[in-house]
Image (cartoon, rainbow, N blue to C red; front, side):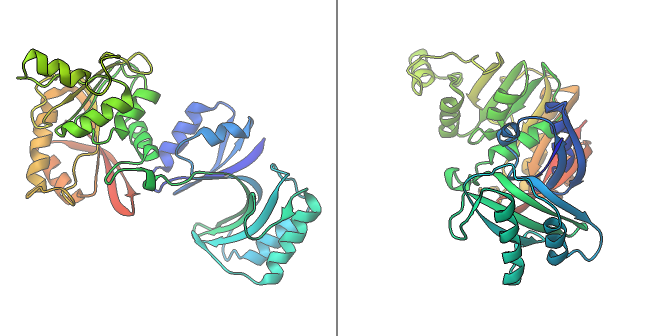
Length: 361
């Protein structure tokens, strides 16, 4: 079995391990670190490129463990044997990284690697704009590797709206929720739709309640999901029909999930959720406001009201999976409402420290 290494967002290593082992029967995890997984995979490497939470994926050329690791010893270990390169056409350059920061090394060391690659492959040297890269990386855990970069995900922030959750983070949060097949789930702060899109595409829920107090965001999510929003209560019949048909010209109905799920999309106040019956949800997965950019005078009071609303609609054994950077206020509100934090993980969202909580009554 060939060896690979893949990087991903900090904090989600246990989620990534569980997800990989669920996806592939032909995978063996060798090492698991924060933001990095090292594994053997007996399959088409192109399958790895489809995993949306991987940032960089490498075909492993050499690994080392121990204290005092350095680039000369890693280069020497690689160059002492015959090499095999998974991608063996195009051009290459060599890069060195120490604890996630690119590092400068002696030119002779770089040249030694370049000559090794030229001898053992059909790759051509191009230091400016290569089609391929050979990386040497040293990590603080006492682990180092040399790998051929075979896939690289372009970061998506430039294509996102301000405050929009990256799709790979949304997927990992949904995975962290450990949703059972056929679950009834809600995202009452759907925003730009990152979490509902992942729930609809990749999780076998029976029904998904999607809502936000902002009508513009609901209309945007309706276009992304291809689902007509339910009319707002209190509108006359003609206006309700106009709002429901507006984004789609009336071509689709409200229950058109990719995997046959029922999707209820509407404008709604998360403090009320009047359209959701008592004790009907298996889970809530959401990214509520953090009060950092929104005008929320008391974020702890906001979270108190949120939890009161959530408690009404959740089944007795239901769970909440919530992302927030306001950890002190959210934990205080959870405690005030008698909720239990079953588990949590710390991550970074657009450079901001945040925590994903999994709570129950």
